[in-house]
Image (cartoon, rainbow, N blue to C red; front, top):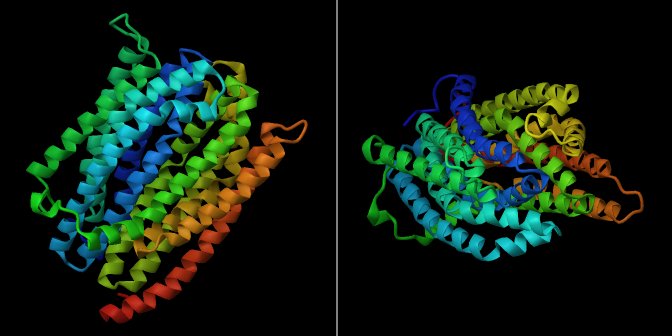
Length: 455
């Protein structure tokens, strides 16, 4: 356990964000590695895997329900020096992870064809996407346990073990992807199915590694069979914080689904270009996301300890860092987005769509920095409903205009990208205002409740 209620806030953010960023990076590399080798199979296979990858937003959303709730409640318990409560929260979250993983596996196996058919009319694209999802289904199910164990460590201020486990998984995936996708050394290429299988085996390896850490080395929280039986009060607290946060990712799933709907008439190359551009964009967001993932533990421990000024300082430092980083990344996408896309595909139509997407969408990167920092702060304060509201507002102001534009004669994809930029700017302004309101509402009450003042 690491005490985050003492010392430099900036130093804590940087110290936690670096390994968290590395962990997110290697997790993202799953999809970049898969896309790299799948792209060699052609635009149809790439479009299928890219479309199927959108389902990950559902898995991320569901896993975030457990992760965010666990990080927040464990961080608050650590701040109050309540180790027993932190351990109870961890075991309850793990129990929920088992249930969610089982439901996810069954859902994917049953619903994958219908889901892909809703995104594409091309039978070959659908077949590639279904094969990828079904072979990745066990890995998606295991993600819940991996995420919860990482979240528990993050709540206690420890991030390196989860980072090392994630790095190990991506190394496994890098080794297996060319073998299973392209048939290197075996002469038996499995294509999209191989991409899913490689990721599943990699996730399994990561779960084994981090479980071993908990059994051998972790001392603050750990597995306790007596605490696995679900308790309504703890589950309610976990889900009260986690459900809205998970809902944000589910809204993002709908957001991407709307884009695929309007892109579908433009063919497999356009779908592949958008899918590739969106994956690269998610990779670009990694530094800002790492800071927002560190913020709940740092501000959350200080909130639990009643260190009001340090909570406010955590918000200010994180916000400034994220906006500065995102402005630099905007320049990268303005200068040469074609190069970023061409690293994964040499098909001119795919590169054209992906580069155009990155060049326009990068104008909202700074606003996304505000959104990420705000989301982390909502989690730290234990009220994630404002984040869900701002995300819902973004979805509404994007989906309705985009669907309307798609029905007009002469519709072009560039129109959707500009609508997306405007909707994110609105979300950023809304999120910033809601964070200021939450700080004003919750911190005075926290001070009174703990009798603590700013250091």
